[in-house]
Image (cartoon, rainbow, N blue to C red; front, side, top):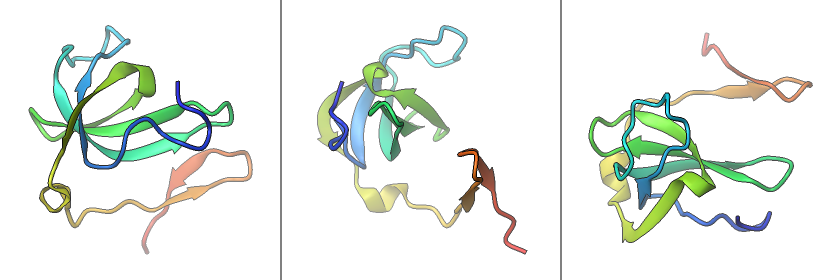
Length: 99
């Protein structure tokens, strides 16, 4: 596990997935690209990963990912789709309406 200041994986890094949750319909050894990361109060990192096979994005804990040592071309992963999130006082996030 990484320390609180540094994440183990970087943006656009190609990783191999080893999902812990057996309910996920994602098989082990599927490849994906890191496109987001977050750290909780305990210093544990989680990552949003865009799956190579279908482009879906899923969230994984650091221990579910393995680096390939390769990086994706970040321009290839960009889309015009964005989501704005606001954080409530209780720490929960919610999607903001643009209107």
